[in-house]
Amino acid sequence: MSTTSGFHTHSSWGRTRRPKNVNGASSTVHAISETEYFTENQRFLHVQAGTSAAVSKIELYYHASATWSTLQVSDGDGTYSDAAVAAGKVVVFEIAGADKVKVTHAGDSSNAAKRTFLSLSTF
Image 1 (cartoon, rainbow, N blue to C red):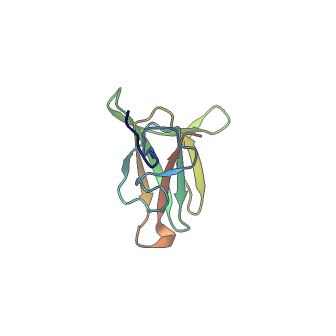
Image 2: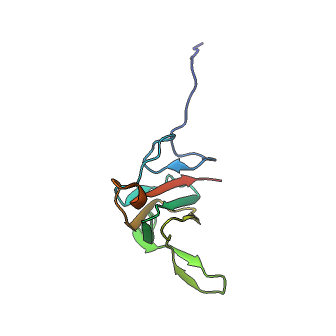
C-alpha cells in the first residue's frame, strides 16, 4: 500500500471554472506576445483589449481539418461578421472544439494601454 502526501493540482486539459491565462500562468496576468495558442479544448475564449489596443481578427484551428478559419459571430439578424474586440473592451467567445486560437491585434506588451489578454474557461 502506498501513500502520498500533498495535493494534486491539475494544470491543463480539464474543466476550468475560472478563466485561465493562455500563457499558462494561473494567477499572474501576462499580455499575449505571440499570436497562436493551444486552447486545451476549453469552451470559451475571453479577450480583453487594453484602452489603446484592439483585436481585428480571431482565427480557430481544428486538427481534424488541419485548417485555420476566421471566427464568425452572429449579428442577431441571421447574418455573421468576423469576430473582433474594440479597444478597452472584453468579449467572451464560444470556441467549443477548437484546438488552437490565433489573434491579430494592434498592441504592444511593453505598454499597459496597448496590451491584449487572452484566457480560456469551460464555464
